[in-house]
Every structure is written in C-alpha cells, then in structure tokens.
Image (cartoon, rainbow, N blue to C red; front, side, top):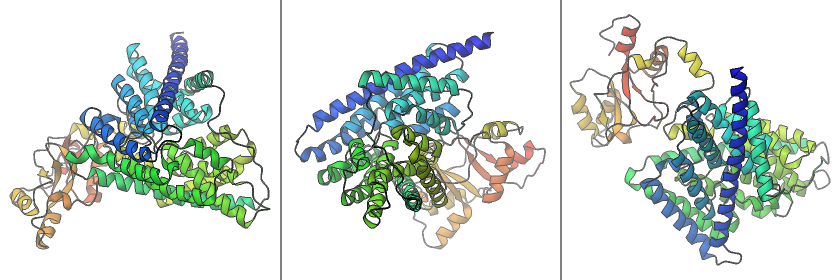
Length: 561
C-alpha cells in the first residue's frame, strides 16, 4: 500500500516538475530573444556582430573564472555525473547561474545552443525540489532525468524525443523504471510551452514524399557524408578542448574570448553563423537557401561551434548539431537535385534527413534522432530514408571516432562515468581499490626539469610516479625509463609536462575491484597507479601499488614495487 502511495506521490511530483521546468525554459527562451533583439535590432550596423560576441565572451569569461567555474560547457556530462555519482545533487546556485549565463551567451551571438544547459537546469530544478521535500537520495536521483526530459521537451518542442533522450543519453537505459514519470513531465512541460508561446512548431516543415526508388542510394550517401562530418566534428572539438586545457591556468579567463573573436569575425562576414540559427534551418528545410550559402555555412559553423565550445563558452552542442546537419543534408540534396532533377525530392527533404544523420553520428542517440525528426514532420514517409542515413552515419562515425562526444568531454572535465551496469558488476567482486589506497607521498611536479626529476628519484625504488600541477592536480604518469631516455637525448632541461604523451594515462577509481587494478598494471607495465574520484579525476586522491594489491589477496611479495 505504501509503495503504491509513493508511486502516486512521485507521479504527482513529476507533474509539478514538468510544469515548473516548462515555465523556466520558456522564460529562458523569452529572455534570450528579448536580449538578442536589443543587441541586434533589425537593420543594425555590422559592427554589432563583431563587438557583442567578443565583449560578451570577455565579460562571461571573467565571471566564469572568478565566480562560476561550474557553469561552462554543455552540462550533459555534469547532469549524468549528478545522476550516477552524486546522489542527484545539483545546487540551486548552479541552476540560477546556468540560466542567466546561457541566456546572455546566446543573446550575444555565441554559436552554441540552449538545449544541453536546459537539461541541467531542468534536472537541477527537480533536484532542488526533491531535496526540499526531504526525499531520499535515490528518489532525488530518479527525479533528475524527469526534469531533464521536461527541459528538452520545452527547448526542442519534441516531447517524445525528449523522453528518449533522457532515457538513452542521461540514464543510459531505455528500460528505466521511471518511464512513466519521464513521459508525464515531458508532456506537461510541452503543454506549458504551447500555452505560453502558442501552438507554433520549432520549424515549419512541408510534407515530403519519395520521388524515385533511386533516392535511397542518395540518402545512403548522405548517411556516409554525415558520418564523416560527425567524426571530424567530435575529433576536432575534443582536440581543441585538450589544447585549451593544456594552457596555463592564469590564461583561463580569456579562453572564451577566442571563441567570441571567431564568432564575431565570421558573423561580420556571414551573419547566419551567429547564434543557434533556427531561422536559417527553417530556410534550408523549405528550400529557401542556395547551395553556395549552405556549403559555406557547413564550413564556417563547423569551426565556429567547435572553437566556441572548446574555448569554454556557455552553451550546448545539440542545436548547432541540428544546424550543421541541415546544411550538410541541404548541400547533398542540392547537388543531387542538380544532377537528377526528375528523380529527387526537394532540397528540404535532404536537409531534414541530414539533421537526423548528424544527430545520430555526433550525439550517438539514433532512436532519439528518428523520433525527433518524426515529431517535426508528423510524416511517416521520411522514416525509412532517415533510418538508412542514421544507421550509416552512426556506423561511420563510430568507426572513425571510437569515443562518443559526451564521454570524451566528461573525461576532459575530470568526470569518469561508469558504463551502464558496471557499478553493479564491480560491487559484486569483493574488495575494491578503496580498501588498499594509500597517500601519494612520492610525486613529481609537472614544472621541474628532467634532470631535477632524476636527481629527486635517484634513491627511490619505485619505477613510476604521479606528475602533479600545484598540490594535487594530476596531469599524468612518469616512468623512470622515460626520464632516462629523455636525459640520454639531451632533453635534461625540458619540463616534465612536455614529456607526457596525452591527457590519458593508466589509473583506477576507488570503486574499482582489485582485479581491475592488477589488469591495468599488467597492461601498462607499471607497479603503481594513481587513484582518482570519478567526479573529480583531475584531483589525485592517492595511489595503489602492486604490493598492496597482492597483500590484500594474501600474497606477500616484497619485490612487487
């Protein structure tokens, strides 16, 4: 009886969360539009398109570094971390700061989207409400995808796709038991959007039909092109983010300005590159954009979005992915229509399928992509071409770029999310790394030279050491062999961080079973591994040694170090 009542209360709370999140997202949409109209009034001078992205990124960059470092980026990895590792905790401060910083960033013309930040805002509203009502952490945790789905439903105007996105991407489980609550919150938020802003779709999309069976080959080609563009987008964005993170910390405040300058200069030359650009997506879908402009926007938007995000500006990538997909699809469709005018549909059909193909290739959420496009068109005829393009795009993108974009961004931000089911599997294997972790007393500073490091470790028996910046910011692992080889090459005055190959290195988390530590030591040839928390992988928690692991299994080996 009590369980039934708890379910009913949870559903009622989901209804309230859906309504409240819908109002919050609508408020952000209105605030962004009103502020944008003041900054870029109709017929305004071209200098505004240069000044406001640069000035806005400069001011926001300072505020983000000085006061709100947690507000950067798309927020999807942070939301997943709150669900999987933080007991559903998202602070009210995070919600408020993300709301205003996202609105200000997008209004200034930064070419990012509101959907990712909206998901964290919605999840944060659910988290705050759950904690204020005194719910247990597991119940609060279950509310986060409810709030995220409500936010995506209002931001994209696609309630069914929002449900799938919350389950497929946020939860990582399409069979999650909270399906009913997610559906209820998403539908409620969508109704609030319609009541406040009217019954207007995000895009006005005409109906399409398959003109000739040979079009399936063209849609397949579009899927292949979409997969290549998706892999290039993901790889380039992650590469740029690594480069920005490698810069000295004292320069962090001006990193967003790089994105602002790029956006401003591109906006001065081609205004369509500024902001999310939903209006221009509508032009492509309705065949009102010429091939030359679409090809130009593919190139410019690709670099504008990746640089703006990698440099640390506030905003998400879902909207830009949709924009890029529409331009890629429209370009392929325009070329096909020029070559085979009697056997191909209008350009807008290919732009629509291109949106889905890039969403599947970059976000790696193919089911959400199919449902989202169907909700935009209400037309079954586009489903089969969309599924063909999505499948090929997903396959090509996964083949060319193994790591999904959100997983890569999470790791770069120091968040190592467990894979679905991994936590249950690891907890069933007995002793964990947390039982044998010890303080890291032997570390090397990333700024010391190779010669100084060799002198420091000359009398030590270890073969590898954690390399840290400052007191405990972990940047990599250094082996004695690497130090000796560098000294032999004459690189004795080189700082250690120059020798570290990448941001990836062998490590373990406290919840890993001991056998995982043994396997990683065996693969890497290291007898000492750093231990890092999943939600703060930039901080060195401690170390685990081969000797300690073997001792925990009852095998004494004094030579293991």
